[in-house]
Image (tube, rainbow, N blue to C red; front, side, top):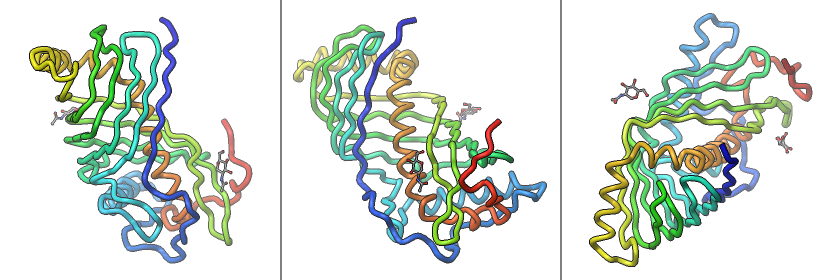
Length: 262
Ligand SMILES: *[C@@H]1O[C@H](CO)[C@@H](O)[C@H](O)[C@H]1NC(C)=O
Ligand SMILES: *[C@@H]1O[C@H](CO)[C@@H](O)[C@H](O)[C@H]1NC(C)=O
C-alpha cells in the first residue's frame, strides 16, 4: 500500500473570537452525574438535546447553524492512488445535520474523552466545484454546480479532551477528533463536466452513481478529514463556552492541568 498524501483546507464561517461563555446553565443542557449507574442513558439524551440546539445555531456563543451549514471554501489536494484530485468546492451548503440522531454517548472514566455514535438519515451537500483529477481511474475535469447525497450515515466520533479552568469554572478543551463513518448509499451529480460535453457528462455521472460504493471508498480519507475538521471547529467553540460541570456535575477537577494517561 502506498502512502497517500492529501491536504484538505476548510474555511468555516464562524469567528474565532472569545465569546462570552455561559455563566449560568442554558436550558438546552441536561446535567448528568458520572457516578450515576445510568450515566450513559442520561448522557445520550443530553448530547441529543445539544445537537437539537445546534441545528438553528447558538448566536450567543458565536455558533452558526449546523443545518443548513455554510462552508465558504473546501480545498482538496490529493496525490497518488485511485483518487488523484485537485479540487475546490465553494459556497458549500450542507443540509441534514439538524436530524442527527444520537445512538450512544460514553465518557471515559479517567480521561473524560468522549465516544459518541450518531446517525444522520440524509445529508445533501451542494456547491460550486472546480475539479481536475482522477476518481476510480477516470480522468475528470470540469467546474460548475454539484451535489452529493449520502444516506444513512453513521459516524463514530472519538474526541480527546483536556480539562482546564477559567474564572473558577472547569472546561473541556477538545484537542482532537477522530471519526469513522459508514454510509448506506450515495447519489451525486456534477454539472458541466468536461466543459459541458453532455454525452460524456451524463455517462460519467451515471457511472459514478452506479459505482457509488468504490467512489465513496476512494473519497473516504478526504471526507473523514473534512468531517473531523468541521466537528473539531464546532466542538471547540461549544466546549470553550460551556462549563464542563454544567454537563457532568461531578467532573473531577483534580484532573485539571494533569490529564491521567493510561
Ligand atoms: C443504517 O445503517 C446501519 C448500519 O450502518 C444499519 O444497521 C441500519 O439498518 C441502516 N438503516 C437504514 C434505514 O437503512
Ligand atoms: C487546548 O489545547 C490546545 C492543543 O493542545 C492548546 O494549544 C491550547 O492552548 C489549549 N487551550 C486551553 C484554553 O487550554
